[in-house]
Image (tube, helix red, strand yellow):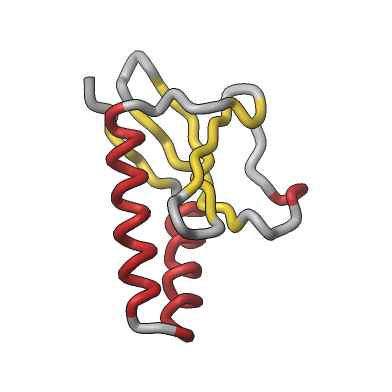
Length: 98
């Protein structure tokens, strides 16, 4: 059963910031980031049941980049809500929580 991906405004802004940052240093890096992000979305659409990070918030690392997607799952509606695209080197106190 496929899950629908919904990206929160916070996560969308963090994704855009990451793309803008990578664009400062490389032409290919933003495209590679977007490609890895799409693959991660594909994984979440088919199997979003990853490790719990906090209560009902789960996380999945974006391949080849130092970011993780933090998300919740609504099993009744088959929705994965992306809460944050968090850079793994940032202060862990700023990670999304309930």
